[in-house]
Image 1: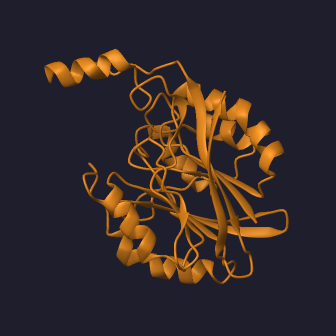
Image 2: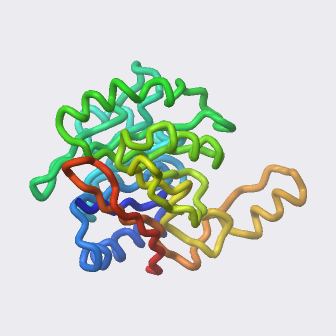
Length: 259
């Protein structure tokens, strides 16, 4: 089984990059499943039903989210009709939506879990380290192939999470910080890991925002409107190969593709 995972899609530039580059990635890698993080799709803040469907039309199988999940109010009711859109499972159970799904494609099954870290995050969520096992038990009834999008701020929390579930899931891929890290590896138990996949959008920027406005904010410590950048658009992601019988990853490759 081959999985293509794309980092946080930021605003219009990221959406257009996905639309233009994904067909080329399909031709190059022939993935069985495509998963991406869509929490910054709507102008950098959340996602709307229309934009979610735009991504599904681009051959995306599952969209994961993060701390901006509730930024667009119209998404609240959308979860009930679209199970392929998932939010971090460690939000309270009273929140709309679900934190995991098993999808079918090409005669194969993939479990996708969305989790969020707690260190330096602005939202206080439940401890994901303590809540994973019941979800894994349920998914394992259908498939051993499981990918986790761990949306978190610090490298230490992401690395710890990878080791905590090494051998229990096929892959732990980090999102949220928008900077692709060069630490992709296969952990000892057979889990593919990377601290951050990067992002899809304008890379001539400060993590997707216009450079001068961010520099001004750091220089003055005053509130500054953070405009979205437009230059250097590219897609960041990883390609992961998984043995379906065991659920263990056999390879992980970082990719960066200009639009």
